[in-house]
Image (cartoon, rainbow, N blue to C red; front, side, top):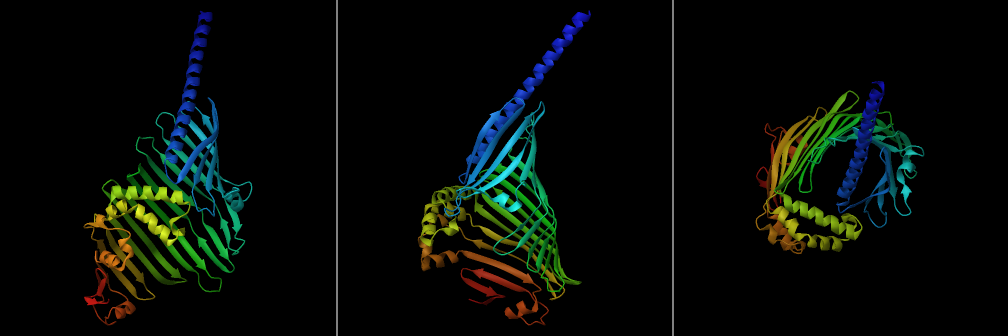
Length: 427
């Protein structure tokens, strides 16, 4: 009986060990496939060249390097981001860690080492669930002190952390959360103290079916000019952006807010702004972006570095998606505007919208817009109305209102190249 029991136990152990080794081997293969897929997806972008080198795949451990090269102007040379990694394969998950290197120009120079110093690096660490495909990756920014040799401006950075997560579903959705620790920027006597910077974002979809949500908050921003005056302190600064791109339409909504700006005990200002852009033909937007990326890669420099004639020539090559994008009568909307100040006696608000008539926009041409007649015809497509309520005395005077008037509302009306204020043409 004892001998049979030992044999049975040995068989069970052998089967378990084989299953474990097989599971780990599957983990290694799954990781390798996912890495290859990720690099291939990155390499599809017209402005990124992605590759994986020095790959050594094993059952329990794997190593390699992911490289991404971004095209820049010929003078700067290429920018390469290099991520050497080490992966450990387990039965349930795979862990990965490594550092980030940022190389600039030819010959390549490690920009991050120049700034953060030797022995420090941006580190990443993450894990991937072997069954669901869910992943979490954390990027850790090191603390460092750096001084610009030209301006003398000094940075005293305290570090930060960012985490990107994916739930493993077929929908390419990534959630990002991060926080940058308060840091200081100093130049001579002036000091800018940046408080805790928090961010979170959601990125879902691909190509012309895309969603992006960004939320960035800064708890305090303090500016001290070093001249003995009370520092200016801004609190609760926030930005929220929502982008939606599908074959039908591109929509973007931006919200900015500052809860309070003060100097000493004196409240100076606060404000909110919400602005949106919509009714841009979605498929044409995607085609325009894709074609421009390819042309800029061929040019080897950013659009703003091209000469005027080169810019015009490039735009002529993308005329079809450019004017198709405008054919659905794009709209710019000032959703809301608020500005308050105890010091200046301001408590105003506003809203309004501007529309571009897209009728027969596909018949337009870049060459036509280079002429005075063509520019006038394009301006004639514009129409809009903005209303600002309870404007401050100076703006009231500029609008032809009495500072003592009870109704200090200003209405701006746009009809082509004609601008009217409260019904009176300005030009």
